Length: 193
Image 1 (spheres, rainbow, N blue to C red):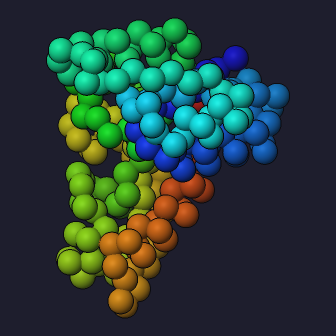
Image 2: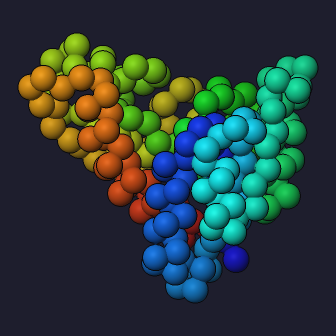
């Protein structure tokens, strides 16, 4: 079985989309792939309850309990490795990862970013797109490298920026597309492993 481990920090809507598609499309039966665990750095992350409702094991590692970013990332890597992952998915995991962590999972660590990379890496992407006068915005699934939001692109989806859009309305429109492209890109990456 090809295991997928998903990391979250909050509500886990992208994680939930991946879990839902994996079950609807019977990834386990058809592709030998499954979401094996959901890990979070926050005990109150809403996505943990969603994972448990789907029978997926969860684990919390509070980053504040570690002396350094390196110590946390080392503990997180050990927790992930316990599930022998083919792919590790960042789904709203709000931590900058150390180069050592990224290297450990090189080629199997994937993220989704709410812009059409390489445009608008980092934070506040929707407001930045509106402020720049963009007519389209979107989301990008990419492999994670040591450089923030700069890894090889696996999938993208575009949405129009409408007159009167706010960062919130644009974010909501982009999120619906994230829920479409992220499960597809994760499965494609798993099938390469």
